[in-house]
Image (cartoon, rainbow, N blue to C red; front, side, top):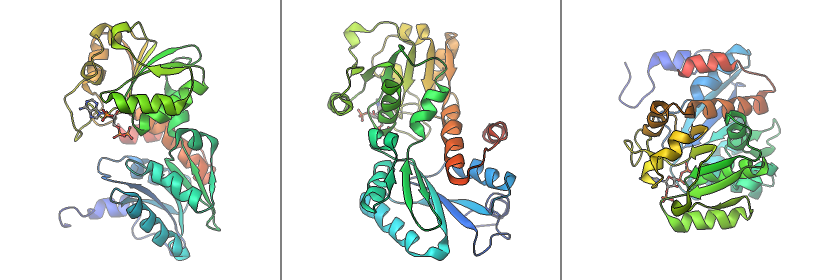
Length: 302
Ligand code: ATR
């Protein structure tokens, strides 16, 4: 038995390979706050095991704020014996990750630069840092239709919205942004500075090829777990019913109220775990150069 909040022995041994870790085992982490419900340790540790790579990925809960992020990174990187080789970065640190790598003189990928946030850090054997963003290409890969020429109703104006818009407009989609807070939506559209990305107008909604939710509405433990994101933002039901695809970024629970409504209407649905898997596969490739078994990963998180 272990104390409340501690990792139990089975998880320590099976997921984190306690007992076979060596001084030179490569260490990866998922950095965010909070990091409960995170699937990254499950899939990446399985990937390392299957590819026979001596590495482990650990949860690294780091309080919100730039100073917390910077202090943690500085300490972890200062000790070469810790052998930190890469990070998944999640809310609220994706923008901090980009800033940290830039200020440390590392490399920032074009897509991370355009999104203004990084969800992946790669650390070379010599400590060289690279910041990248695998959320953006993962959305295109799993969209369920050809983005070129498609019309997208994008719900939300936070970091996830930014990643989606940056990749969608680049792929030739037209994106209308709907958000609870008008100021934030306006700021996002202005920052994107692309005629393909405009503010959504509830008085002029028309049919959309894709309704894409990046808000935290419907998320377990979030501000509005029982809410349907499209409804909350005032979109009429027929928009979801007639959409070609409803794309949900939330993956806990598997069936958010938006997903349930779309399924009930017979609309094609892409759920959050598809995006999660696609971005995680890309991270694993970047870190290891190996191709993980996404079928096995899907089984693990189902
Ligand atoms: P992330 O980086 O994951 O996108 P975020 O920056 O906190 O997270 O953004 C959360 C998004 O969910 C925002 O678009 C937020 O709307 P506001 O900009 O108006 O805050 C949206 N959101 C959160 N709770 C909501 C709610 N109860 N109703 C509608 N939108 C909500």
